[in-house]
Length: 181
Image (cartoon, one colour):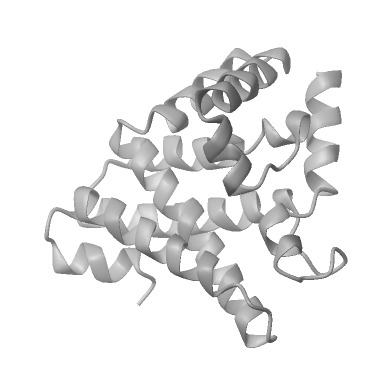
């Protein structure tokens, strides 16, 4: 439990790298834990709305929320690497982060993390959508303050929309709900 608490403390104090690299001062930059919390609440709300449409089961919604809660937990060990470095390192970064999550010592967290990373269940796809929506919403906040985070806003919403096409399978009401209309 001690290792887990250390990781959680790090996440509460770690500004997200993408924001800082684009000029958002560290004191204003969203920290990883805040992102996780917002994405989790978004997932809970959207998930229950989609479950009401029978797009996803209620148990899958709760699994999605749990996945969002742990999806960035490895960053508490290895740091929040920017997208360029993550892409360049590819599988190496994934393996290092996976080992870091395993080293936390929780089989539950590790299994949820792995399911999120695999992205092949409906629950994990919903978790990814909510992660991207949270990033998009934060980008819109920074854009309103004059920070140049257009690239992050565009890539986040594009990724969320692509994932939604798979989850919603053309259901207009599903798409409307998930895009926070």
